Image 1 (spheres, one colour):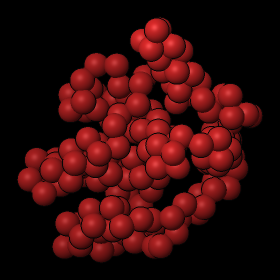
Image 2 (cartoon, one colour):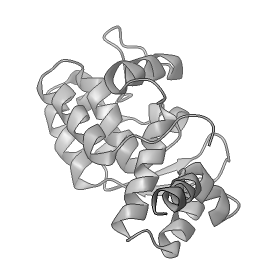
Image 3 (cartoon, helix red, strand yellow):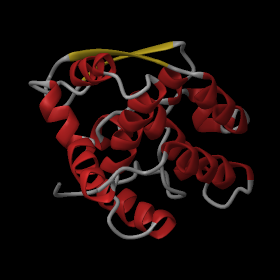
Image 4 (cartoon, helix red, strand yellow):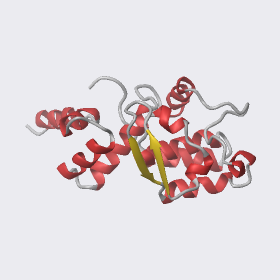
Length: 179
């Protein structure tokens, strides 16, 4: 598999909440929590507003595919949002992922921060892959979960989704380890 690997869901969620609660980098913490729970590409994630995140569902048109997608805002995101209720940008419904200067994070800046907090070999895409791995593991590594993820990710087949999530290589490695 080429490109970035996935970030473990629990590790990402804990890191995101820690960044929020410690006030170390709360907006980036929120980005991690939303990234691992929504499974969006970075450009779609960065376009989200507080008004959208305050809803129970978010409907977007994906930048890359131009397809309409409806997402559910889960309890992890709602819990993370509580920290921002006093902020002006939250109250006005502005962009959720902004720097201290008020500009929306660039994908390059997000990638630098992800490497800083999670190490080499990961990128903003690793949050999307972590979301996928979590869905797959929660559904007992079922083919059904790969079908759903294939639809969510707009992949042409479950084989593409398997490769994307690094599942195939992992299974091949197990062959050698179980001899």
